[in-house]
Image 1 (cartoon, rainbow, N blue to C red):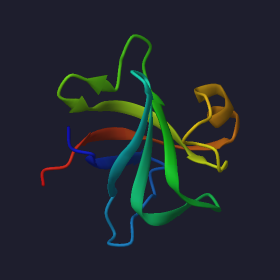
Image 2 (image 1 turned 30 degrees about the vertical axis):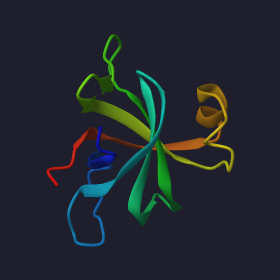
Image 3 (image 1 turned 90 degrees about the vertical axis):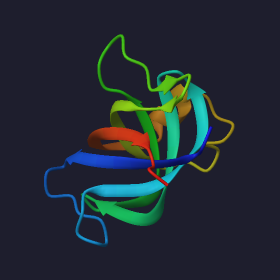
Length: 111
């Protein structure tokens, strides 16, 4: 399974990447469970004064999943991770140390 993904940011509505678009290219660096993944964007972003490139992405709708047999895809809410132990911490710890700033969708990159 390729780790190359695109995160499309729908909210905040005024989000722009360094090229003026709404998409962030990056990779999924950790699958916590079927509803939570960690996405690392190739570029640092600043949203509402918070800077980072690591996002905790969670399913947006009850009953949905992000992790599927053929990859990761779905509508997600996300927050910039503000902790250094994101590779070993459980979802609740990471969630407590994330600033929720985006709503969007994640899909495989069309490499």
